[in-house]
Image 1 (cartoon, helix red, strand yellow):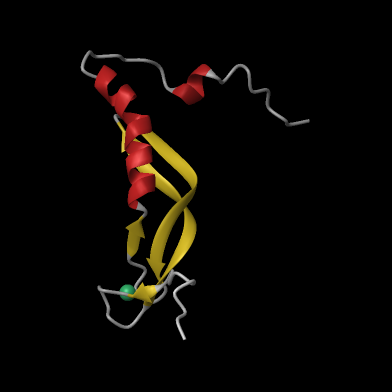
Image 2 (image 1 turned 180 degrees about the vertical axis):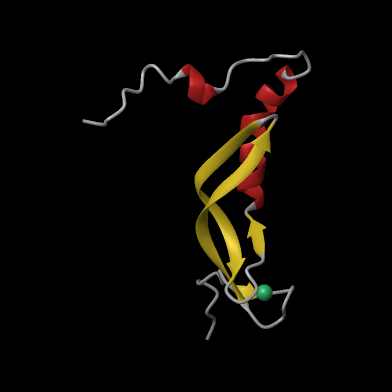
Length: 96
Ligand SMILES: [Zn+2]
């Protein structure tokens, strides 16, 4: 009886050889120039024992494609202000 319908989404960890690597959605952090980019709900495989992370290659290439146009522009020195400072006056403090 063939049971090829279910694709295994977990696999034994190559790093510690004892843990199980499971797909999870994490917040991916990466640096682009001097800006910290956070990508929520980023697919990753994480070992439940040693915590080794493997990222989805399609997601990585998607992210690279997203970031590449901006990275190409950074050849000239663009000293733009920090994005948090720029939007500072549009954020009114919620202290009452
Ligand atoms: Zn492991």
